[in-house]
Image 1 (spheres, rainbow, N blue to C red):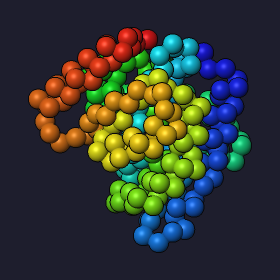
Image 2 (cartoon, helix red, strand yellow):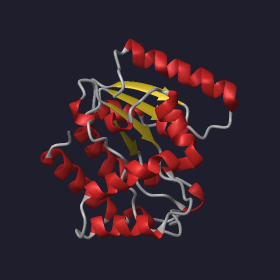
Image 3 (tube, helix red, strand yellow):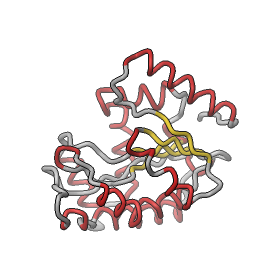
Image 4 (cartoon, rainbow, N blue to C red):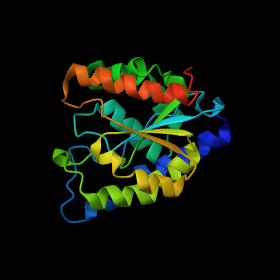
Length: 214
């Protein structure tokens, strides 16, 4: 179970990220229609496992976000609600992400239990046209994501997608004992055969690492 100390520290990190708009004061970094960071999922039993697994991606997409979700993020930022309400909301919404393809790839495909894993992004904010300038990614990783990874302290990190893979060395500096497994992004465009092969490859790595789902 998440302990109060772990949840409080996660909330502190998330609240700091939610209040941050530093990247968008820089040239060539444009905001999407909504202007707030998006904390990601940490499972109810994440810290219970002897082998903790986190999935790292690059940043949220600029797709439309529901006003209810944005209001929740703003309330957490301003101290009106707690991070536990974001986690409850994401527990219900993750199965719908990417029209179900997100969960089909990372959960069903890899045989992972949602309550036992965590997700994180190199950058916590979406950008207009999904531009993702390196300056923005680097700044957010240094200010927010690095300390989040230290709190999560995963034993296995699945680094998902080409852009996220560029941060493997940075992650190794933060957590030198971590096992990093680069893999494709769920929204790759290489077809069903590639998906099947990639999922099989990653599952073999997890099984050889004695990973067991929840």
